[in-house]
Length: 248
Image 1 (cartoon, rainbow, N blue to C red):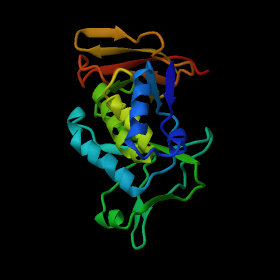
Image 2: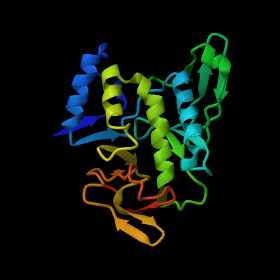
Image 3: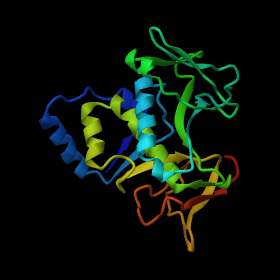
Image 4: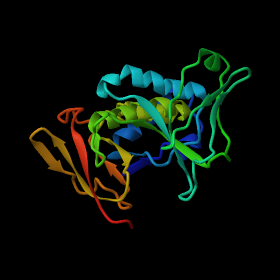
């Protein structure tokens, strides 16, 4: 049996939150019967509240040792393949707060801290139709080759994403994932990563150790892959080295 949890639209529109301990207990029992929980990093949600993004900033600070040389940026990407970020603006908007967020040419941006915006329960506003663009954390240690990702960077992205998304989960679903230790720390959660382009495969490399990705680690669309975020035998400095394939 495989339970698929799509963090994003599915989670945001899931069943109503359970309000009692018996419901949580029932979900915990169900989780124990599940072989794998798959978290699809591609089904990004619409933009969160400013408070949710700040939870991601806090998670980054708390777990920064996973990628000590990296800074936290967020990546804006279109929902439609042919859409462009040209002309897109982002701002933090509250009753009195109006903070423009510079958007780089590569679609990345830095979310600033503002106590006033927190106090006002500010929103993140784009000058585009809702659902036109998605976001995801972007953590990249300098000097990592273009054809690779550093495992600690991916682990830290996962921690940031979980911190931002978890408040939108129903009480039951949040408890259910927590029973597994959270999406970043257990073999029973498969966090699907977005590849820079179509993949033929990848290998994990750490010093003299090198392992080819197991069967099924690169998914059918070849743009997503799964790495062992939970596996402490792979250090944070391990690299995921991509073998790129042709376009579909």
